[in-house]
Length: 255
Image: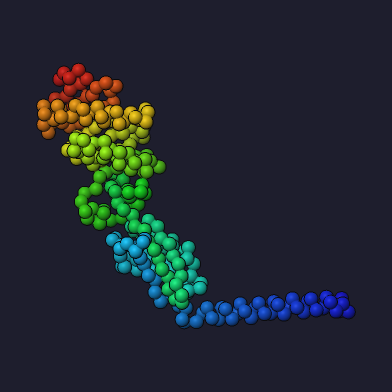
């Protein structure tokens, strides 16, 4: 082998190449450790330059910053993203480097729509369940209440939007929407009336039941004023009504 000049040249060139790569890597490592690349600023901003309302500096400092390790080159951007997404009110975070010693974190906040279940969690306008301070969520007023089986959150939000539209003609709005484990719907209106809508047998079932209630609502209110407690719309062609001091069935008789 030692008499094969071509092979010796190939081995020499390979060793020189490895040496050159090692020197470049060592040089890069040395440069990367210079103080100028120590992270000096982590700028946090809202999506599309919107102002962040609930994510504040003290929360970020206590929750996210202790989990960030490394400098401009060595910091793990995915770990930084996860650290910020652990901060209350953060729905999604994206992170990018800005030369030579900054990180830019863009945050999308949760927009609270209501409470979810009985364990103090919140439901966002996009159907995400999250945990945050209820008092902060209700700064603009008391939130509607929602409940349903696990995985039904987005369906409940969509139904709530529909119910808002459906009840507009009688100037009432849903303040509570519940989907039972048997997938039966109950809505409580902001006038205190609870409405049993039942299960969705077809794509039009619930809308038809709401329309039927709306058609008789003026007469019910005229006769019973604010005494109505609940209305059961699960009957094919009628309803059952409970009011303070009486109950009316399909035939309209007291019972």
